[in-house]
Image (cartoon, rainbow, N blue to C red; front, side, top):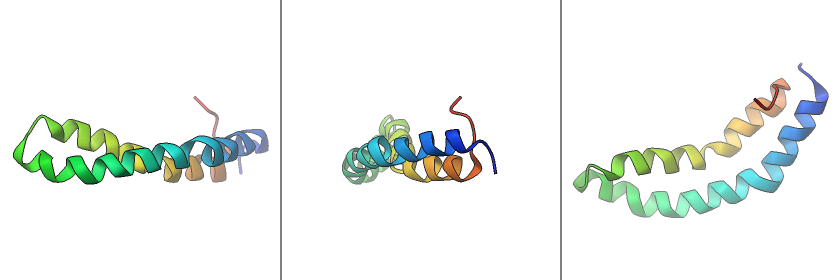
Length: 70
């Protein structure tokens, strides 16, 4: 396991920030993703929104490993 201070910081980011980011991105992702089939420039935006939806998973992985923030 890594540094426990970093694990605590990642936990705070997970609880305070990442769930709100994921919730916001999920709604838009549901609307944009089907349109990206018809409108090619929306593909990049859909991929960015998917990354936002997966942000809690990223934070949880970093929390468990105790990885530094940068």
